Image 1 (cartoon, one colour):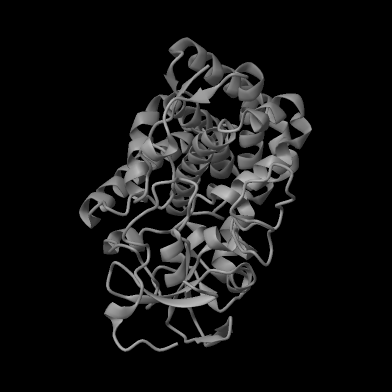
Image 2 (spheres, rainbow, N blue to C red):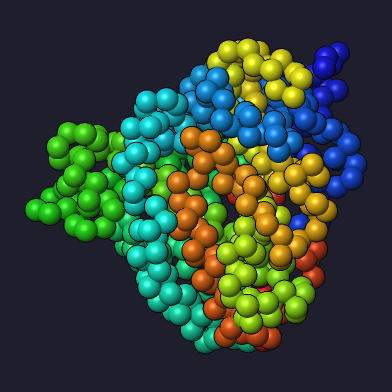
Length: 407
């Protein structure tokens, strides 16, 4: 698969975005990324391999020869990163490999196990109750993103971590900057520094307490930092990752899910009348919407064959989970949303050792919120055409800025 010049390679991400928020690539763009492995040109001028089919994406994400380490030569980037941002990735175990990754992830695994998430479902229900009360008080009409989709997962992750929700405007605005591919390196570095300083002050305050506190950060301070098993900078990096990922992804999923489901009154009624279908419907929403649309990034540490193409050591690789979730060899009519589909094979949370550690929490938040919304607001509808809504096309996590609704 040889190209004569770099400029002939298709760009990734595409230079134009579909107007329909449920369309990942239009028909013309799909022809430019035929898969299963396509050489593409990144905005930085570097090249990478785009892997877009389900089987090959899973092969890539579970293969130990593909590294998540930003510091490795050849690691693909969609934007230049300031050196300090790369160096200060301690604790961000998503960007680590092998034993270093396992060591930090293992400290959090028990916290996000399904049985532990079930224990906090009363907290999620209370938070949903508050958010829906705010929605009712705000309208109709009202903006579902600002009243429900964004504050709800923010409050839950703040409670779990021990971060004051009163500071939500601060960390939400900085989180958005970290995920925006248009932000220049200097502004990105400043936002990261501010968030790290904010979280460092919280960790220091918990260290000053005799018991550390019973939230997640407090327990890690008491059980890991003080015995010398975890450095403070590592804990700050872990907290930063959990705080940003813990609210941005679920918030964007909620907004897009409501937009999709309310387009068909029958689907919305299913959530109300048959809530036992909600877990499966959530998986289908995760598959169909696939909000991490720019992909998951790796660099090869040795020569590996994927989809009949030899990827050389030092080559950047992008696992395009959004297209893998629309693979016709795995899902029938994948461009259609089917509330009865068994979509558990999706890779919306990634795959392999780096798959999302918080997926049980995200599933619970989505399931509870959508069922309660449909039950309490059976006539909920969006007052704008999907093509008229402002979407976050330049964000690493796709979503909606606003969602005007009435009932």
